[in-house]
Image (cartoon, rainbow, N blue to C red; front, side, top):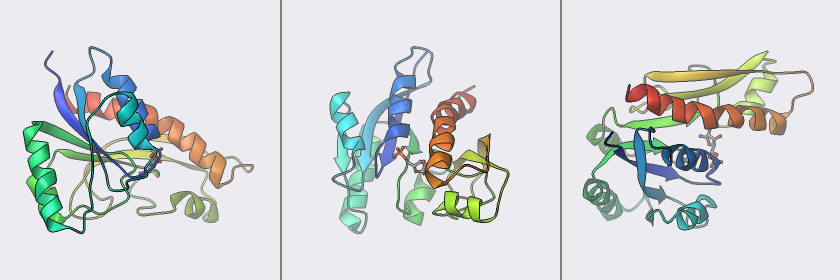
Length: 185
Ligand code: GRF
């Protein structure tokens, strides 16, 4: 099987990135991570890029020139799928159009519920019985692209923001890889 080249965009810890790196090391996983892009120079996830010797690039999205540079880098690496794994920035519309149907994101709620930030506090505030994560295609509207898959967890009365995040993230690590399998099968 010829694996597709993937680029992962991060801003933070990179625990989802780690899950993807682990999956991609298996011979039957459809992608190889060729490039990691971070918009924060101190993102912990960059340490993973170093540890696993994956090329990485730090970007500053406010800079137009830099955007062109990113596109060139993606083309140079023949990237056919972009995974947003905790990328805390809105991608420029032109960029999304250019990679239409090739960008996927993981979001910590059962979309279309709780789009945007701070999902765990809102889920608790509204006394939901369950929540989860969603892997979806990225379009020009925030957290609104076609859903690839969702995974659900149940909320107990003892849950708080931190326990909820832990439970949801555990599902995320499985969901992201499953979604990639689904795309290529
Ligand atoms: C994830 O929980 C994801 O749902 C959200 O950002 C978080 C990133 O965490 N989009 P990490 O950097 O992968 O640890």
